[in-house]
Image 1: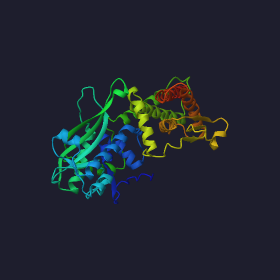
Image 2: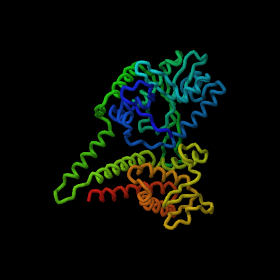
Image 3: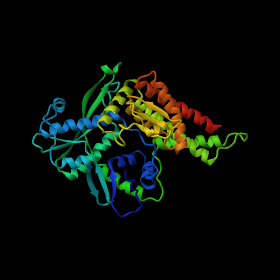
Image 4: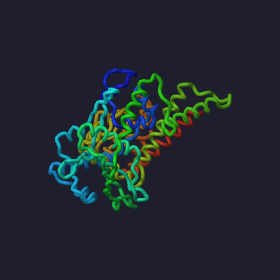
Length: 405
């Protein structure tokens, strides 16, 4: 993956801003500046395979009706109108990345349209975006402000590409209706119409230019959870270092290591929220397997399993590997090798800033790998997933105690 291009304050050359970059600025100008100018990223979220699968499947599904120049049955049913997927040649480029140069700032504004729909005679075009999720307790949908911002920004781009685009837009949801058992759960369709408003976009782009040309980062947004989290971390560390004189003060290095551990804890909690609800975790792993077999997961394929110093995860096919003969390695052979590899990669992403280097990673594998191996003896893959998350939690608690003593 090419290294991200950073903005140099007052630069004259063209700089690309994506829709998500603009959303980042709206959420917190300080986090946006630190990332875009100084390459200081806030902790990244973890991808949700179910949403990735929904997006991929819906694109294929709507492309089928696009090719046949006919309305999608569910769209026609919900909207009571012969609205259909737009099949103009330019749509292929719009999905890859629609771009508009904003002359006064020299920013190239980028948006990737999931879909564009049109009326019967193609005199009007409507932006459409696919979304996944779960049915809310109330059974009603409320559009997140970030979704509204997304469509407003897309509309600002789209109207400059083709005058047929209207403010009328749609969010096409596939939502999981959760029941007590997975077999009774099902996906339902919901279409939410949204009248987009791009009046604010131009002004925000101008503000972003002022922000990025500054020599110092702007103030944080008062509701930014990342800045608030960092502030609490710094407060905690300051408290620790100012404890009784009898207690040894933490060194600068130890402070930094504790902060990295707290970031890992935040990532782990985010992973729990995304993946380990009892009704969802089994489905997540099923999707992981299906996407892996089709080689549609981003990054390295899971088909080879997991090879690292101290831990090997491989298919239960009886075939030997070079690393198998190394003394002290944890060798896991399982029909669930794809799911186990995905779980282990997730754990590495969680601890990527803390366990750095071969020896440190071996320490991590000793804990996670052994728990995984023991859990596989008596449990299905879903329970193994939960046991690994539990082991990671226990490891963080143990390490925090070590840092604070």
